[in-house]
Image (tube, rainbow, N blue to C red; front, top):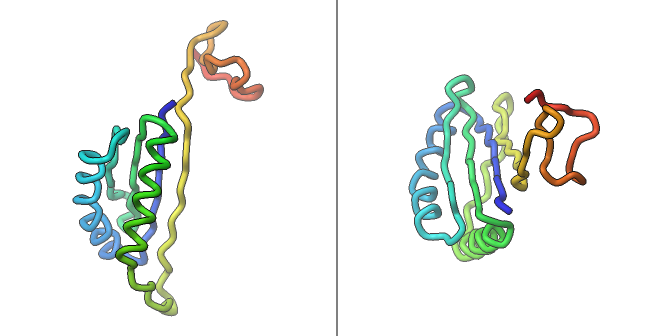
Length: 129
C-alpha cells in the first residue's frame, strides 16, 4: 500500500525558504530517479506564505520508504550538517512538521464515499457521493 509523506518547513524568512527550496531541487531529482519505489519526490514553495515550503513524497509501500529513510540517515552520518545557529531574538526559529499517510481505497457505498475496507470506515464522517 502506497505511503504519502508531507513535510512542511517554515523558515525564519522568505529568503531562507527560497534557499531551502533551491537546495532541495537536485535532491528531489536524484531521489525520484534513483530510489526504488519512489513515485514522487518534490518541493513546493508557498505563494501565500513565502517563508514556508513543502516536500511531497509518494512511495510505493512502507518498505520503500523505510529503505529511503535508512539511506537518508546514513548520508547524514557520513556528511553531518553543521549545528543550526543560535536563535536570534525577534527572528522566528525554523520549524517543521511531518505527516505520514497510508493510501486508502474508497468507493461509493449506500450513495456515500466510504473506505473500501469496512473496518477502516469512519463512524463520524460521511463524504457526499
